[in-house]
Length: 238
Ligand SMILES: Nc1ncnc2c1ncn2[C@@H]1O[C@H](COP(=O)(O)OP(=O)(O)O)[C@@H](O)[C@H]1O
Ligand SMILES: [Mg+2]
Image (cartoon, rainbow, N blue to C red; front, top):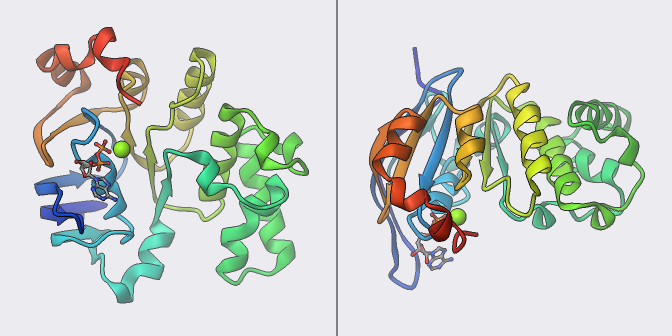
């Protein structure tokens, strides 16, 4: 079967000369949830921004067999739902409902259909009661849920979440793991949070220096890179 995501020898250098990706190979099969682990600056965010064409490096990136190229971007952006690390950057409308409906209206859905689908997505993430509230008044955990609802409303096949537990307290982290665990999509989770990754992922890939230097079960990767996940060190992780 065609993998959902297939990346070969991906390389990306920022304008200032920083080599952020230095030959990444990666596959996501249907039904998998994979953790992307590794220190700050190892290339994880740069990598995920290639999955829906927000960045374009050298090498091959395919989603559902389609190359991530200009002519396929509208299709690919419907398939890959990307939730950014900073939920605030994803929420900008006056009300939660309008925020969640925004992408749908942009796709050309009529107002009623968009509002219906947005309400259903808010229901999925347990945020129906906040539909009329202003996003900037919500807690970090609530903002994260609304950002996820905005992505779910687009009915993607793949969910990509960049450090989704940032700013969440432990109960919020657990609630988010429960929510994500109940969603049917295949997922890529960028995280430093080992309990979170262990709860959700069947596989992990470890980034260092713009490459994936190890892949395996969460247990194998955590055991192999124990020092990288020690509590002292993870304090410096955002
Ligand atoms: N906009 C940018 N311009 C220049 N360098 C960048 C930019 N964004 C990230 N980098 C650099 O690219 C490398 C990879 O960063 P990033 O993908 O954000 O890593 P991670 O998500 O693993 O923390 C780092 O050296 C980082 O400093
Ligand atoms: Mg990052």
